[in-house]
Length: 90
Image 1 (tube, helix red, strand yellow):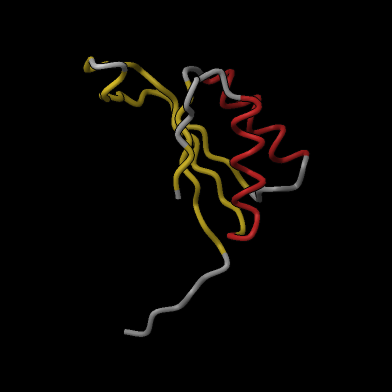
Image 2 (tube, rainbow, N blue to C red):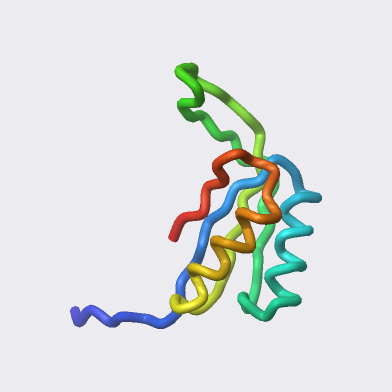
């Protein structure tokens, strides 16, 4: 099987609420940085935070975009996200 380097990526971001996810989605779409965002509520996240194990209900954003736009997406998400350290992963 050949490996193809696709120009397209899916970026994953978690948010504390559907409202935050929708707000960020609209900004990404208005700036034409993405083709589509799926907002998936009901995600249970378990993680280390400040020396403790934390548990939260979150909303997952699946952001469909082009690879060369990733850095701009990270900047926009960070400037519109309420978390101290938002997760933005490919």
